[in-house]
Amino acid sequence: MDKRGRLVGIVLVAGLGLAIWQFMRPAEQPAASMVHPDRASLTDLDEGAPIVEVRLPVQLSTEATIGKRAFEAKCAACHGANAAGQNGVAPPLIHRTYEPSHHSDEAFQMAVQNGVRAHHWPFGNMPPVEGLTRADVQYIVRYVREVQRENGIN
Image (tube, rainbow, N blue to C red; front, side, top):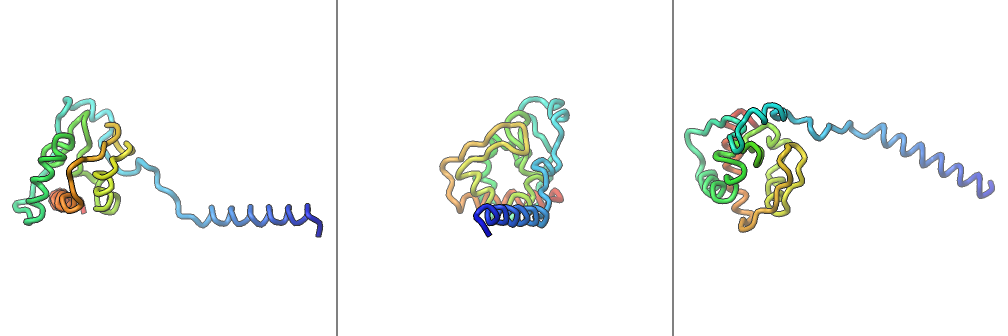
């Protein structure tokens, strides 16, 4: 077999392999597949108004109580009281978009450490949050998860 024949054979095998790989990959979900308020409903809210209604648990665990204090000190200025979001500022964390199966606890850690490029909501990028340790964020996540569960987000 000459060099040209080998090259054609390699290209054909590589192309076939790529086609099989593409066919076997799981279908990707669109980035905006999570349900969130449409932009039109956000325009009906005043600037800074809560985006969602939040029911609070009757009682928080000790860890979530610590997390609530940390949330109020570092997160509520943007994400609003009880993580209900603020129109024009930041999204609600008490929302299906942030359910554990879509945004893991580690995603919250990474968001605090590195910031987040806007991808679900029209609020722009989130900057890193200074002054929080991994343990602080674990407590905050515990608080958010307990409030999420009270609101039917598991």
